[in-house]
Length: 297
Ligand SMILES: C[S@@+](CC[C@H](N)C(=O)[O-])C[C@H]1O[C@@H](n2cnc3c(N)ncnc32)[C@H](O)[C@@H]1O
Image 1: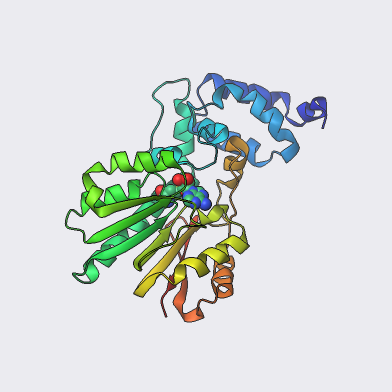
Image 2: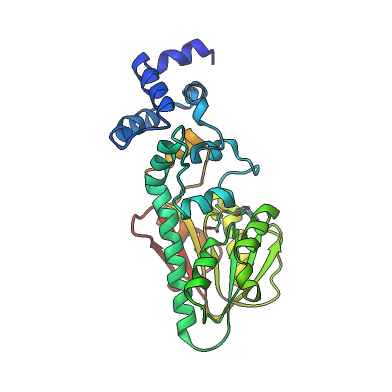
């Protein structure tokens, strides 16, 4: 579409407001509603022009810009996920309001909540009996979740196998988990190709299946389900289609996920031939991140 047509679709007032935000390092809390309303009402044809107006903020100095630039070549890399966990805000005032805004979004809260959910599941596994336990993580990213768990449970009997296809993610996870090298093995490989050589009490994956089409989602359940110990569980996190941050992620960071409903998750588990009585769907407290739980029969 011709740019002059696009320009007409953002009003003069909206453009002035957006330019003011860029000068101010992002929206102040009192401006969140107005900014979100503009973003949520943008049509796809307007995105290019909109991004042009906020271009000075769309660089790696902001979390939204990191999402947009994708310095590691794909959305949702280990670095942005780690920064969400540590609620990082760039101290430079040219950018800090953007980061505060980003960290205030329900999507960011849901990512932090899913880590808490994972920590609870690990604690349950550890408490079950005195056996050594095995947890496999698919798309392990920064492994900040594992770090939090092992720091807070120095007596843990869990051994973690971490699979990620990005060497940068593996390097980062290794360096922050140096103290726990005896409890962690790393595998740099695509999860579609990884061949487990043992059985697990928990297979966990969050922030990965949202990128898979349904057919790969089903394939992955089929592939990994057979590597569960008796009493073991496969838990898959997926953003819910009620995620209020969805359009913000798409517009500001060109970050697209396959959002799914509880019914979508159950349907795919059934398609992968899991038994209905072994399937459950839970959610973190905001209902933005769903967890498909599939138990062994
Ligand atoms: C959004 S991060 C989630 C990290 C971690 N699970 C968490 O929740 O903190 C997704 C990670 O999956 C990895 N990943 C994406 N597709 C993958 C694939 N097909 N095989 C292996 N790793 C993959 C990326 O490199 C990235 O580190």
